[in-house]
Every structure is written in structure tokens, then in C-alpha cells.
Image 1 (cartoon, helix red, strand yellow):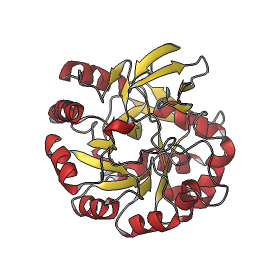
Image 2 (cartoon, one colour; image 1 turned 90 degrees about the vertical axis):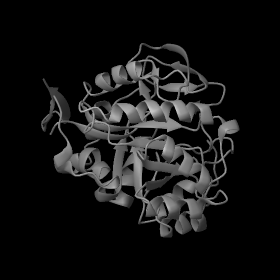
Image 3 (cartoon, rainbow, N blue to C red; image 1 turned 30 degrees about the vertical axis):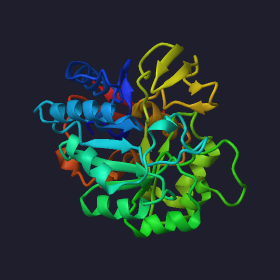
Image 4 (tube, one colour; image 1 turned 120 degrees about the vertical axis):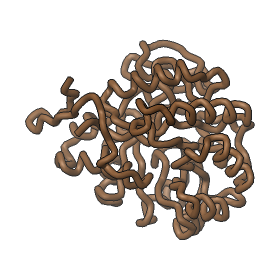
Length: 325
């Protein structure tokens, strides 16, 4: 296997994809560095942003996608927002001032800016217009995932019937305190049709919840993502990124102490897959499903398309993936 597939990468080594200053040179640099880490292909991800940031970043990424060097490594774009909840906790590290009502018209504009390269769209199920937007996106070949939301059973079920396929970083992008029975985490778990995307970096989810999600959803309905932030690959310290004053701790935890939320991950897919492997709940075949085959299926890409410079090997005894250079 040439590497893992990551459906959620916000940046790398100081390069922020949701940045008005993103240009072809620094995006290419970040992409080449990402592809050295055990990730064979990925979706650059833009969080909730201003129209100006979208116009710049979508244009830059779309130009680079056309290059022969990256055509099978950059599989499209993940729009994580702007059609999400403004509620504290649900909005997470996103800027609530840039949250936009669910709008087919605005989505069409964003898709046009991207030269039709948006392949995954994260929306909140409960916001007005979500059902109509979901139906439209699904009909036009865009996979819809539900996240950064307060949606309960009826709304999640409604969006699943409207064509939604997944749950964005399930267990995260929600308030720290939720109702013990009626909450969006359980609503997502209970909806069998939806695949759970999870961040297994040892910080975003406790081991027990990782196990519960996998046992509830089944291996075929789980996808590992890194949610790598622009700070991934940098040294511990204080940074301003994704509109947040964030702290990267020595142990890898990346968070905004004021908002009391995480700001993406400092891990890459190889780190996330090795942490998941260390829990000893999945076989090698099952690990490859959640880190390679399932994400490709989510965005309708054939595994035969994936090529890479490196090969990923698995040591069954040590339960460890490594890059064979």
C-alpha cells in the first residue's frame, strides 16, 4: 500500500489552507511535505471562512490539482462549513461570524470557485435549508457529512434520508457539556446509514469512545481522519492559526485555552493509524479499511488510482505501521 487516505487536512508545517495569503508555492510545499508522512492522497480542507478567503484558497488549490504531479494525490476539496451551527461548542474553532445559512446558491458559487473540485461538504443537519442543500449536493456528486452541529435524532435522520453519508469527526465539534440522553453524538451513532469519521490522535476521543463507535458502526462504517492543522509538523509552542490563539503542548495536544476547544490535530494519518492499531481492537485488514478503502469509497475514488512514492508496511507483532522508503 502506498499510504493512507486523509479526508480532512487543514494545512501542514505552518501553511494554512484557509488563508487569504495561500498561494501556489506554499500550497505545493505543504502538499509535498504531507505526502512524505505516510499519506498517499488527501482532501485539502477549508474551514468556515470569508468569501474572500474561499475565493483565493479554492482558486489556488484547484490550479494545483490540475498538475500531473498531484492529480492522483489531491483527490478534491473538503468544505468543512460554512453551513454549520453558530452555537458555542458546536462551532468549535470556526469563526461564528463567517457561518452562512444553508444556501444552494452560495454552495454553487463556492463550487464554481473550486472549478467543481469540492468532493466533501460538512454541514449541520439542524440549520434551515440543510435538507435542500444536502439533496442538491448529493445529486451533483458531492458527499455530504454532518458535523459542527446540535442536531438531534429527527434532523440527523432527515438528512440521512436526504443523501448525507457521513459524520464529521464524530464526538468532536460539540459542546463540552451535553444532555446525557438527547444529544448529537448519540443521534449520529444511532443512524446506521451514516459513516463515522473519527480522529484517533489520542487527544480528540478517549479510547472507550473509539471502541464504542467502531463496535456500534461496524468497520465498514468508520473512517479515520487526521484533521491535521497548519501547526502539524511544527514544534510545541503558541501559534495563531485558523483564527485562534492556540497552544501546541509537548504531548501533541493542540487547543485554544480561552475557547476550551481543540484546534484541529497536530497528528498525521500515520500517527492516527498507529494509535488506533495500539488499541488492539482491529485486525490489519480492518485497519486498512478504515484508513484506506473506506475513505476512498466515501468520495467515489477507485483504489487503483492511488499511486505514491512510498510504501506503508505493517508489523503485526509490534502493531505498528511504518514508511518503507
